[in-house]
Image (cartoon, rainbow, N blue to C red; front, side):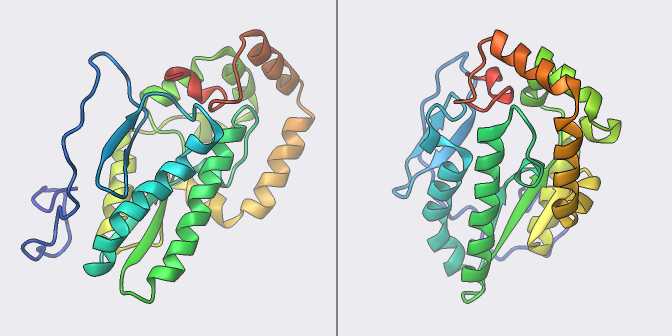
Amino acid sequence: MSPRSPRFRGPAPVRGAWNQVQVPPASLAAGTRYWIAILGPGGALAFRDRCCSVASDGPTETSAQTDLAVLPQIVQRKGYLLNVASLAAASHAPLMGPYTASKAGVEALTDTLRVELSTTGARAGCAYFGFIDTDLVRASFAQSSTQTLQANMPAFIRTPVPVGKAVDAIERAVDKRLARTWAPRFVGGFLALRGILQPLAEKRLMGSPELAAAIAEADAAGRSEGDLGVAGQLVS
């Protein structure tokens, strides 16, 4: 979010307080979809074109790398760091094992940083998003195994919301230096009640005939849980 954006609602920034992390130019291959950009401790910018090609390349690993690169500047300016997790950090669905584990790691990393940074005047927050209307979500929903499991999912959960909802949540977090932010609205309730809702969801799915069918469809299609389950097929 730029401080000059008409959407910015915070106080006028102090001159020189923004854009202090130096990021050098990086080469991209035309026609290649990139999953994530990682800022290394030395300031080098790298791009990954696959989702978690090996276990150590998950969101937790990349979040830790970027956090380490920017923390000195954030601490120096008593700034704010926002890591992006997911509803998957609290809701662990089938066919998404590596993704849910990685996002839970991002949440745990942020919880630790939040406490550690409190001694410096800097702050850390975590963003939790449900299904947002992106290419990744649309590709996941197009898979037959996902469509089979959707029968067990309430409509308000499985209906993607516009990207603008996620942008608004991020802006609120930056503006108010929130410990947590989320979109859609129901995600906040799920986070608060995760200890109750996760066991209930497990019980419902384990008794569902759709679960066996979805797993069989995923196996027949040759999808590997070594990436990100069904979601990883967009860029793998």
